[in-house]
Image (cartoon, rainbow, N blue to C red):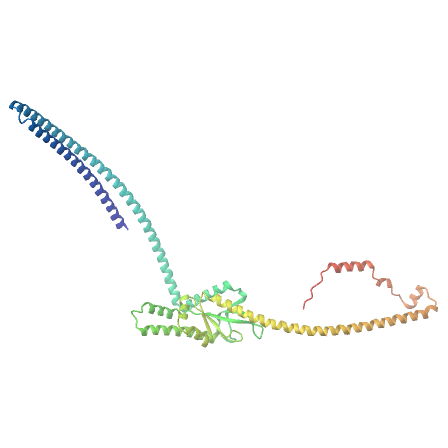
Length: 429
């Protein structure tokens, strides 16, 4: 950039100087041509005048010729003086032009110098700022390179790489599920020490009324994938057998991970009859899909579905909706069964009400018979003389005060008002 800026400044100065020189040379050239034309015209006019004069005076006498010659000499002397005067004026004009040219040159040089210094200062400021930005960019690149080195160290460690995939999977699940909808590091096979990284609690229920679990495990076969990517990038320097070996090794690693998930984490009816293998990069997921029949083979033979970071949410949402629909259908059949049982019991309840009504009717009839008998007894006892109440108390004991059991009308009104204020509770099964 500095070299380009200097070259542009030199080219601009050169062009400005060249333009100034051309302008001055054109001015001198025009001035000299004008003076030459003026002298040539004057000389021609004088020559024509002398010639015409000689032609007219050819027939005159010698005296007249002497006089004319004397005039001609005077005219020549005057012409010589005019010539000297013109030369002196031309010299003065040249000197003035030289001074003007020097002044113009000085002004041009001064302006060029100030412009050049200004351009140089601006260029240096721009270059200094750019260098500062480049320096900052280099510092950021160094930090980025250090971060890439740390990331490379992380990815070279199998355990750390697995933790990276697990953290990414957990972050996605935290965004779409509540803590009650999934669990971490669950044991899905009783008596086994193997723990699946995450399990999704689906809406369905098992025979023991426990939630149906969907196992999800993250796998990151980075070495085989990087080996395959390097083979694609250096395809011109590798043989077809080397590329085929890299492809076979990658497929073998994917199948091995799927087999581990099937053997360790699929345990119906505690879990679903399939599991999910999560790959943390889209490139790895695209490479699995790019291979013809590999995705279907994993689903058919290993009962494992491969998902990436972008389609994991959609896949789990569709599964959850499907299982929720099945659960609703199952619960709806149970509701119909409960309603049928309620209908049967309601018929029995009607029969019980009828029996109760009959019993109450019988009790009413018995009470009416008792009232009739009591009236008969009263008629029989009319002839018996009544004793004073004090003596009857001594003989029979304290009598019952019938007024205590009488319900006052005001209490009945209060009870009715209370029933009106209290809302009637809805009937529920």
